[in-house]
Length: 356
Image 1 (tube, rainbow, N blue to C red):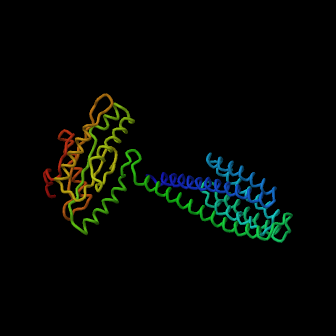
Image 2: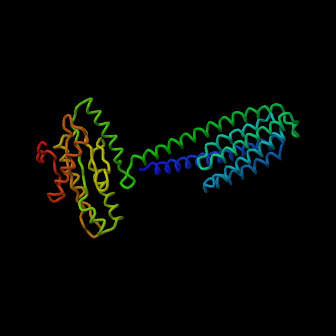
Image 3: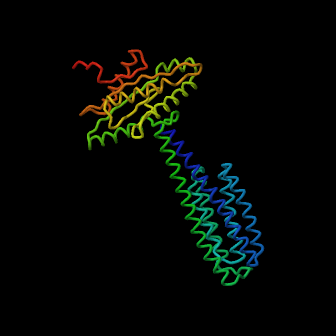
């Protein structure tokens, strides 16, 4: 996967995480305003009760906008609602009610947006900050038209403090989980072949490095099986690349069913697959390879044609590197191709190269 592709996937994952955050925040805000509506009816402030009903409807619209991925419109609508609601609430029932605390929640939500340009995010956030200062100047010392009892006002004040902190904690938790999920998806995409869903070449090299370190701590046999689909170019030419892709997927599934959980299977490149077999000598690896060959030979092409594969097997020798063992497996594979294909060839059966 190229850096550009990874960047695009990372951006998409970040946008999805932020979208999930906004949808969760909109639903939570709507529920909160439903509770406030009942509280204001009970407190004898019907104006604010109706304002909260309107806020519930607005957050329903915000949720719809988020689902349709109209993030900027939803964010602007939610920010406007928070500012207007806070202004009305502190203007009608007093600054001590604590409704202004919710304005501060808008700033972090705006700044974590990955789908909006930086200058626009900061313009919006600075506008919210300026709005909060304006609310403070206008209403902190103003006498409200609705005089709530001391007990109700204190209850609102502390309820809003706690609610603002709980909402912030929930939003942080939701965002963290969404980011972790997006990172996991990105990691999977970076280590998985998109067609066969097997490990890709880079991921298998990491697994081989781990096996090599394990082998250094406790010497045990390590074998490699390199498999190549026979006449794959002819399959593409005769049946089309879509059928060729289906063949690779079916071969990958057949190989996957024939190996152990401790083994490592990857698409090595093109129509080649590499299997790493820990704690397995060359003889046992050849038995596994023969089982895999038969599994592939059971596959059929459209129209009844058969699919076959040639496999080369090699064990990593003492003092040799994994690359050398893979090179020997590759040599065995090509020996099998020259011998007629659809067979398993062990590297230890090949004639040794003459010294230079």
